[in-house]
Image (cartoon, rainbow over all chains, first blue to last red; front, side, top):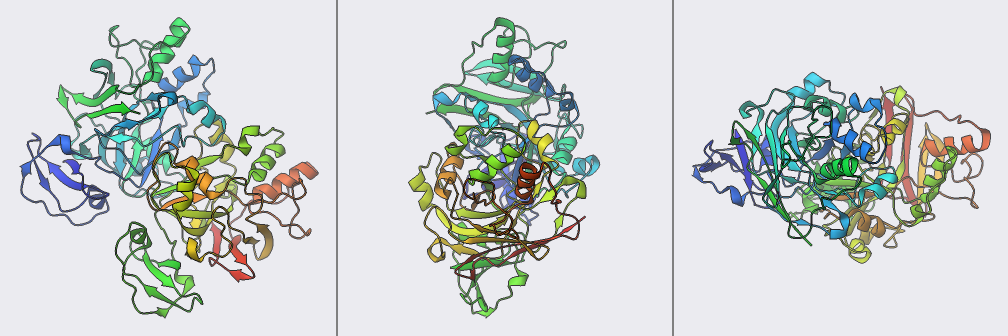
Length: 313
Length: 313
C-alpha cells in the first residue's frame, strides 16, 4: 500500500495512492490516526496530485536517527584526524531528533547562510508499538512503513554544540519527508532489515549521489529499533532514520558521480573526501537559492516521489 | 487554573481541579486537545481523586530539557577533575528528551539495578506555539503552564553513551510528571522567568532535598525556550525542563538535609559532593523497592501534588 497526506489541519488527510499514482482514495483520517488504529473508510478514487502532498506525518511521536552507515562516521573522523572507536562497528550511534514538525517534501529550508546548511539523504522506517527492551526479532516485526528523509544539518553549529556533550538541538532543525510512504508488504527491495534501492541526490539539477542504500549499512533497521527501545517503549508512529547513506569504494573514500563514483548523500562527506585528498574542502554548503532533490529508485522505478527543497534565507 | 488528567485512551481525560482539590470538572477533552485549542465544555463538579491521575500529558509534542542550574553542572565536572568551560554560564546546556511517553506520577520506575538509576527533580513549563528564532520576550509570552518533572537518569549508562558524542538516548528513559499542572496566571511564586518555591525530595521517606528552586537558576525559562527555538518552531504542548534543581551554598557544594543544608535533587549530586570531600561516593543509586517522592511548596502549600514512584526490576 502506498500512502500520502494532503495538507489538512495539523496531521494532514491521508490518501491511499493507486500504483500508477494517477488516482488516490481518501480514508477519512490522518495517517497518524491510521497508525493509531482508528477505523478508516476508503472513499472514491479522485485524481492524485503528488505536488500537493504534505509530509505523510507532519508531526510524529518520536524521531530517533541512527548513523548506520559506519563508513560515513569513519570518514568524518578521518577528515579531522581522529580515530573511530572499534565499538562503533557493534554499538549503533543514534540521536534523538525533532519529531514535530516534519517538513513537507517541497517546503523550503529556511536557514542562515552562516550556519553551514547541508542535506542528508536517509531511509527511514515508521514503527508500530515497540515494548521497552524489545529484541531484534520483535523490532523487525514492528516495522510498518518506509519513507525517505532529509536530515537537514547545520554543519557550522555542530562542533560547538556537540562539544557541550548533550548532542544535537540547534544544529538539527526539523527534517523533511518524502511525499509517499509504503507499507513493508509493498516495498520493492526490502529484505526485512535493509532497503536495496538506489538513493539519488541532485544538487541544483546535477547528480550528487547515486548510492546503493542496501550495501554498507552496518546496522539493519531492526537493530536500530532495538537500540532505541532498550530503556523505553516506542509509540506507534515512531520514525527511525538510517543516517546518511554512504558507500565504501574498495575500502577508500569513494568518488563523485562526475568522477564515475556513487557520489555522496550529504555535502559534508564530499568535503571530507576533498579534505583527505587535497588538504581542503572546496564544495560549498547550501546557499540561498540552492536546490536539493532526493529520491529512490529500484529497477528504474521511482518509489517514494521526490523531496525537492530550495534554501531560503 | 489547576488541571489534571484521568487515565483515558492515549491522551487522558482532562479535569479542571477546584483550588481545595475536593472536586474537579470534566472538560470533554484531553489536556493535549485543550493546548491545541479544541473547544471545551466544563461539566459538573465531581469528587476529585488525585491518586487516580495519569501524567497530565501522557504524550507530549516535544521535550527539551535544559540544565539551567549551572552549579549542578560545575559539580559534575569538578567531581571528575574536569574544568567547566566559561561559556556554560552564558550558553544553556540542553538535550532532546523522550516526549512520548511521559510516565504518570505514581507509575513504577522499571529499571535494571546495573543501570545506576537516579531521579532528577525539575520544574518544567508547557508552551504554546513558539516560532523559530523567537526572542526571549516572545518565549516568555508563550509559557502556558507549569508542572514538576522527574528526569529519570541511568547514570551507569551515561558515560559510554555521551562518549559517543550524540547525546542521551538509552541513558534517559521516559520521565514522569506531577499529577497537577497550573496555568501561569494561577501560579504562586512565578515571576515570569523562574519559580520561587521549595523543591522537596524524599528518598524512602527521609528528606533528601529541600531546595530553593528560584535561586541559582542561571537561565530562566524564557532563555531556555529561546535556545530550544533558535532553529526550529516549537509546537503547542512542548515541555521545557529546568534541569536538576541545585543550590550553591556560600560558593561550596552544599550540605545534606541531615547536616542542616538544602540537600540535593538527585543522587548524583550528593555522590559528587561525597567524592569531592571524602574521595569516594557512598550513597547508592536507586535499588528495587526504593521510593522517591518529589513535590513543591510555597508558604507551606503543596502546589502540584506529588510524584511518588517505586523502583521495580
